[in-house]
Image (cartoon, rainbow, N blue to C red; front, side):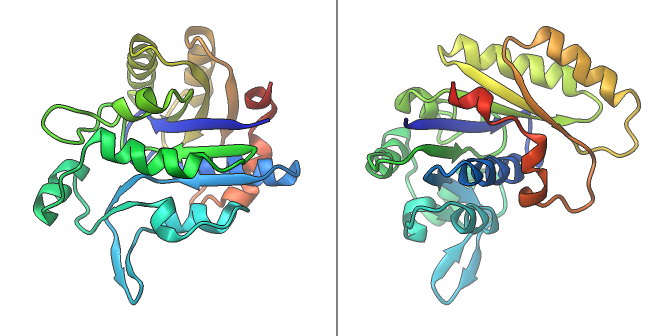
Length: 227
C-alpha cells in the first residue's frame, strides 16, 4: 500500500499543519511508514542551519521516514506574505514544474502514507500564471480539505470543493476544524457540509486554544483514506 494526499484548506490559518500532523500520527499508530512534504513555505525564520519553517519542522518531527529538511521543505521563504510575492522579493523564480520536480524525487521513496501540505487556500498564486492548485494536478494527488469552522465556512468549503473537482482531482475527504470559539451553530454548519460535500468527513476537531496533533489524531478516521 502506498497512499499520498495533498492537504489544502478553505483559507489560511485553518489548521492544515495540525491536521496533516495528526494524520501522520494516526498512520504511525497503525504501523505504517510515513512521510510529509511542505513544498513551499513563507514565513521562515533564520537558524544556524538556514531558513526553517515551524510547520515544516513539525511535520518532519512527526513522520517516521528520515528526510533532510531541504527535502521536506525545498522552497523556504523568509517573508511571511503570499508565497509568490515572497519569492519575487527573494529573487527566486518559483514554478509548478520546479516544485513538482522536488516532490517527485522524494515521492519515489516506498512509503505507506504521505501528506503533501499546501500553503494557504486552493488558489494561492505561485507566479503570474500558475497557482498552487496546479501542483496536485501535476502530481495526480487526491485532496484532503481542511475546513476552518467559522462564519463563512459553508461558502468557502463548497467553493473550494467545487474548484478541486473542476480541476479534475478527487476530493478524498475533509476535516472540520472548529477555529472560532464564539461561532453559533457550529454543529449545524458541519451537518450542512456533510450533506453537501461529495466526500466523507474524516473527523470533527473541537475548538482548542493550543491544539496538539498527537491529541487530535483520535478525532480523525484515517481508515477512510486507506480503503
